[in-house]
Image (tube, rainbow, N blue to C red):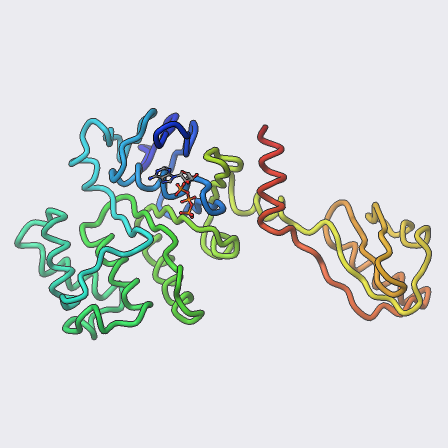
Length: 307
Ligand SMILES: Nc1ncnc2c1ncn2[C@@H]1O[C@H](COP(=O)(O)OP(=O)(O)OP(=O)(O)O)[C@@H](O)[C@H]1O
C-alpha cells in the first residue's frame, strides 16, 4: 500500500539550535495519529515542515509519494492544514471565505459550488453560510478552520492544537467532527493534552526535545501509562507484612496512620484483592484510588528509555 505520508530523517535547526532531530514516520491509512509533546518539544516545527510552510534543514517528506521539497505545489494539493491560529478573514461571510479557500486550493471553477455545499454540510455550517466570521463563536470558527483544511479533499489533514481555547461543549463538538473527517482522511493531530490523544487517536507519536520518544498504538501507550500505584485509606491499618501478602503488591509506603500508598506490579486487579483482604481481616478500607502517571512523568520515563 502506498504511504499517505512518509517522513524520513527529518531535522530542523533555527540558527544554531536543533528544534527537531531525525524524525521518521509513516502513515498508510485514514484515521488519527496523535503527535503529543510538551510545549517547545518540536510539534509546530514538524507540522510546519509537513505542510510546506517551513523548509527543513535535513531529511525528506513525501505526501502520497511526492517529495514536498522537490515538488511543493503538487504535494501541497494533498495537504490540508489548520494552524494553531486559524487563517480566517473576519470580515468575510462563511460562504465568501470558503469559496476563496476553494479557489486558492485550485478546486476547478465548475466544482467550487459543490465543494462548498459538501464541506459546509460535513462541518455543520450550512445554517450559518451568510454569517460574518467575526460574529461566530470559537467553536464555529474552528469548524470553519477545519472546513478550509478539507475543502480540496486532501489525502492528509494536519490539525495543530485544534481544541485550544474552546469551552468543554465546543471541545466535544470539534472532537466529533475530527473523528468524522478521519473516516476518509489521514489526520495528524498535534496536542499537549494527553486525554485528547487518548480519546481520539489510534496511533501516537510522542515527541520530546525534538526527538520521537514513543511511536506505537494508543493501546500500547495506555498500557505504558497504566497505574502502578494506588492510595488506600483504612481505619484499622494492617502491617507492611500483611499488605505484602496480597499478590501483586510490591512496595508499601505509609503516609499517615490511616493512609497508605501501595505500589504494584501487573494489572490493577490488585485493588480487588485488597478489598477482599480488607473484608476478611477487618481493615475497614474506606477509600481507594489508582494513581496514573502524569504526562510529565511519562515523558521523563520515555525519554530515559529512548536514550
Ligand atoms: N522561529 C524560531 N526561531 C528560533 N527557535 C525557534 C523558532 N520556533 C521554534 N523554536 C524553538 O524550537 C523548539 C521547538 O519549538 P516548537 O514550536 O516546534 O515546539 P512545540 O512542540 O510546537 O511547542 P508549542 O506547543 O509551545 O508550540 C523550541 O525550543 C523553540 O524555542
